[in-house]
Image (cartoon, rainbow, N blue to C red; front, side):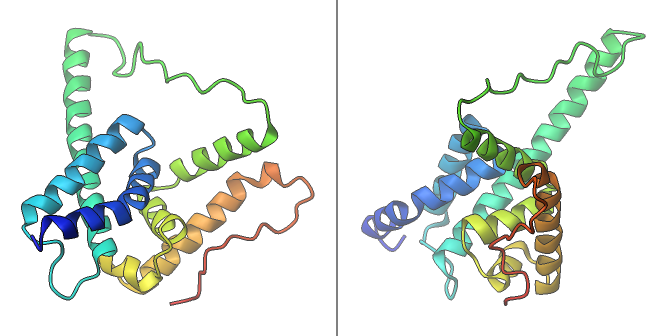
Length: 192
């Protein structure tokens, strides 16, 4: 480690951005807090603040994405095991029998709160790859070349995923634009 002072400075500088990104990625505060802690533990275990020649923020976001991907894998495996186990104990029942989706938040007083909720749901409903690219671009303000480096994909793939994410969000949120005006997104689709 370059020193505890460097780590503290990096933590203070990036903690808000990293936590917001994780929260949007997981959609769950408890999971976000766990992933946030694990991210900083990985930084400490790494022994230095960042690999040579690499910017700190993209490196931290790469750690977050890798940890999130691992958590998704563990959750899928656990869910498959539990469903198989439940199905064996309940012959004749469907694997999803008895499952009730979590209740949604109570109605909010203002239209702005509903819009924000719908935006969050629309972002959460994006396919995983599109959501990651969209969050890195719009919430973290990273350039497409940086996103490509973090995800290990070509810049063209980032552009394509970002374009599809924006189009899907425009479609999903069209109800909030009754005059059918063109919704402008801040995503810089063609910039590199």
